[in-house]
Image 1: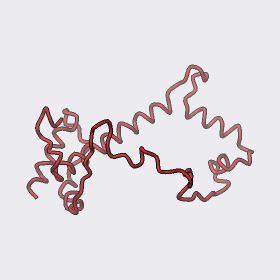
Image 2 (image 1 turned 135 degrees about the horizontal axis):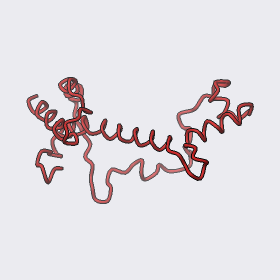
Image 3 (image 1 turned 90 degrees about the vertical axis):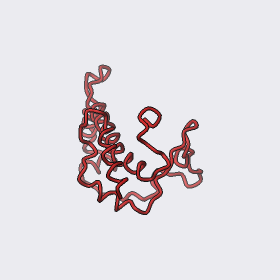
Image 4 (image 1 turned 60 degrees about the vertical axis):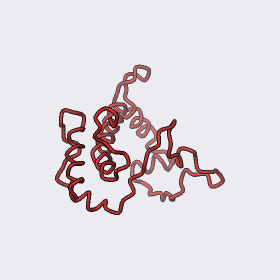
Length: 149
């Protein structure tokens, strides 16, 4: 986008804030839609049942089980989950968790104390609005508002 349209300055905190403001919700929405479609698509090898149907069938088949996962689904037991659940205390943090570069692409962080000011200035703009240009026009609008601050 930067090389073609010349509308994004990756060294400008306001441009980066506008980019995140517009495109993070759009990306999340697309991911949510994909997950919904995947979880509800029929699988030929599973009698055309969807992953959601298979999961529910498994819960119902194991209704009288003493398995805590099944009991939790039916609200028959409350289990406390600690903050470090799923983490190995002897294992070093994974490379993915600490990585800031991907194959030569450096993703700069938005370092500013003005997040609240920027967010308030953009609160009337819907980042998911269909501008018929994949969000580029919404981004331009946000960037112009922030440049005036």
